[in-house]
Length: 530
RNA sequence: GCCCCGUUAGCUCAAUUGGUUAGAGCAUCUGACUCUUAAUCAGAGGGUUCUAGGUUCGAGUCCUAGACGGGGUACCA
Image 1: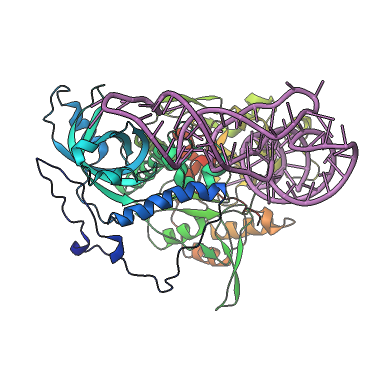
Image 2 (image 1 turned 30 degrees about the vertical axis):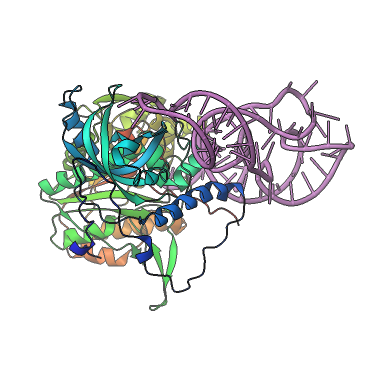
């Protein structure tokens, strides 16, 4: 849908002597609805009593010849820019410039024939004063129709009130949109976390720092894109509907395609298709996209979340460590995060270089076991009530690491060189085949990034898929056989480094949010029962 | 999935050991006010106490089940 010049709001005509309120297109000119039945009568309950008061004002605006749903309103300045302009003014003078702003009425203070209101737009807040004498008795009734939450445009002189508050002294007002619902408590705002998430639009208006956090999210993602494209990466889009959900260990969401009459799953990772593109000669690729995992919900897990994966031919996990550090620094700056701060009970520092520690060394430090000795690991694992019987030593080691080491990692810290058996997509160290060239970046005990020197030996990849699948339900293994992927590897994938970053967790970290739901605009919720 | 906690007016919150007609602020309505700042002042209206059962002379409060949410835990390499 495009915009046409004809839809432009007629220019406000102001007289220096007697300023008038602008009157927009009469309500009567609006096309009648096909079923021109009268508005549904509203029962006299509390809920609609509040709404009815607003509907009465809506009707009154119509009688005054004003469209309560507004039209295009051009040339409004950002309130933040107006405030900057106002800072430079002499507070005592009354010859400030005429400014034009638009926004939502957040506070309304009625002092008889004088009304003060706080107008908010995406950039800031400013006080507006409207006086009966200043606008004349004809236009004054419009002011009586204003409610908290209404959206208006205002034109007037920028100056200061007697009490020193920067103020737009209205000479013209354009009604832009009526709000039929009562806003939340004007002081406390919306507090109930359920309402805040289900009605995020209200949370964005009334919640302290909520909009800032989502602005930061947008800037973080832009900074990541910039960092990668500056390094010659191409952004691509892989399929979200797949036959086999590979690249991670998670239960997928299942769906079905009717025309093809085939089951499909939603992707759980981006990895395997991006690697196909490495085979295809796209030597530096990344994707920023949604993945879906049919798992539990927690302050750190949402069923759909945003992932970055990046692959660089001729690199390795060391290349990706440098890239990860560059991305975090750029994202931190974009979010305006301080260099050091406290988050989730951890003291964290964005000061590079981030420390790098070997997986086995951390395990030895924290648990006192000998990482090279399966018996020693099993003994310590048993003390942490980890099941050891009949399990691969690397799996026990991995569980022990998660149970003991993870929570001690304040970070950001690179944990490097993982036990190979839990890394079926990773290249082994040439000199030590039981060690995989993999790192995870931890912050506040939470995994933020995961990277490998990518396994590009098709025969080994196929073997790892098979052995990992043996005795394991497919849901529980990340090594889901993907013969098409093996076929691609057989054509030759260059040696490469690959990186995955959980964007939601990164945004949590950089905006110091306690829950993933604070950084996802519309996190999942059960429907309310009917 | 399991454990703990919560749900009272549009919003934010009270309500003694189970005891009168469930209160307050904001919001709404009526009135006053041309310099307010969560404006103020005077008055008024507004409730299926999440739902369904139960115990009791009496339930917002106790019990059972359910719904929704928050935290934890399991799962999530």
